Length: 371
Ligand code: ATP
Image 1 (cartoon, rainbow, N blue to C red):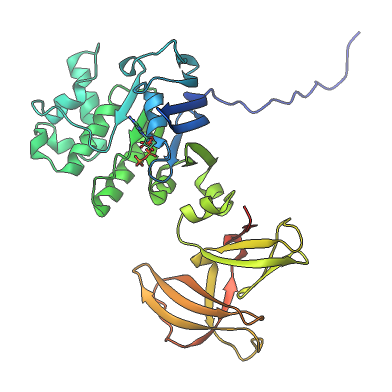
Image 2: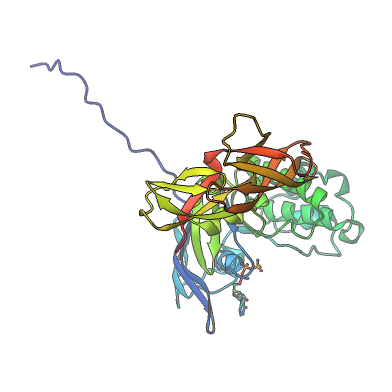
């Protein structure tokens, strides 16, 4: 008997590659101070995850636990599925974890040339292969011409590039970078960040990078884990955190926000800039409305503008790529709000000019004022 039935269609679950780094329920205290409070974190192959947060929130402690520089007190750490740390038990030391480390001021070996510094960690390969690998990485990080120089002949930024090349040379399963650009001046930092990102992506290195700088995290990260007081408050793509912050702390961490308060009436919050959706907040409750400066568009007041609503320019400053306009907005109920609008390019309206304000609602966030 032959069957004429159609072959069965099988739905495949999307294939997820196992994480390179997995941290589960990691908790860490220094005597009475709790630095990390039960954190779960995964870094996938080829992924750059940034630990971002204010000073003292536990970023470095978490990175040091991943590196094996800090003994695990509670939780579990695995690298490519292999357990490397359990509390009061197994602790694979940093040099056996196959991780590349670079810090803010990674010291190079002063008596070795740049090339020798980079080949230093390459064991078990023929010398010529080691030199070729080191030279390739130095080229990619813009340091190819300095292979025979000694560290004291290099600037801080050049030394940092060499330190990154040295950490990358053994093709570690995981790169752990702690504020690797923070000692550099702004222009140099941008350049080295850019070079580093391209090298990390080219070699496909899974990376955990600590930074307190939101712009750096957005530039470098596939995902950002924003920390506060030992917890990860929100983890997601830069866009998710910037455009969909889970609370006011996350919204404000990525740059200045205008803060307004109002009462929820008929599902809306009235503000001097207009009414915004109250997003499930209960009727009569107080709402906090956060408006990014770039969400405000400013136009000269039209004759058709409602009589009761007007705003005027207090001052305008050119900041380079954008202009910052200080505005006094007048609400229907007589309330006033001082707002900052950030406008791309040169936009310098005269002091006192009456203007209309238009809101880009995708950059307006509403939270309960009582949280
Ligand atoms: P920063 O951005 O300033 O480096 P961070 O987010 O990396 O801060 P951690 O260095 O992880 O924060 O520190 C978290 C908390 O633990 C801080 O309050 C810090 O003072 C404390 N701490 C860190 N290391 C130690 C230590 N070895 N002994 C005692 N307390 C420590």
